[in-house]
Length: 239
Image (tube, rainbow, N blue to C red):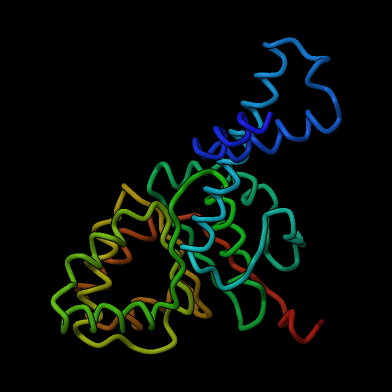
């Protein structure tokens, strides 16, 4: 038995080993046929790998909140549709490279909804990145100075779901407009993007600033988008 456990450790079959030990401790090993035992052990290994992959993806994403779809509270007066969330939970919008635009006043739960959708994407095996948009554009500025901008853009483009929070809090500098355009262009119809903003979508044109760039960015984001427009007073006040 000890030799088997050592070999499982060497092969890094952690789920297999944990389940093997549990079966041995409960003396079920002798009650199962070879096929039955293998099925249990292999299922345990697959589940362990899925759990570890989810944890890796979740940590890499750097979500603002630890949230889940199951925690969302649906209230028609707040503008959160269970039907829409159920549709998004399938992940088809990610596979189709569509956008999700979440708007609403400060504290109404926008970032929590975005984080929940992001966690759900990680559980489905997608690579997710969560950014405050100002911090992301600061990164692009530093990357240009360091000569690593192409690597950064390439890394972002390979992310299945990009979540940009706090969109529109400040106007964009010229280079920031260009950087945002390149990020959105790289993702158009290939990878999904969630934009979170306190401002209604109708205001985004003015926030971006440059008419030609604003047209190009919004054309790629808006027409295939799913809209979540949250209403009501701040949940922080309610709590």
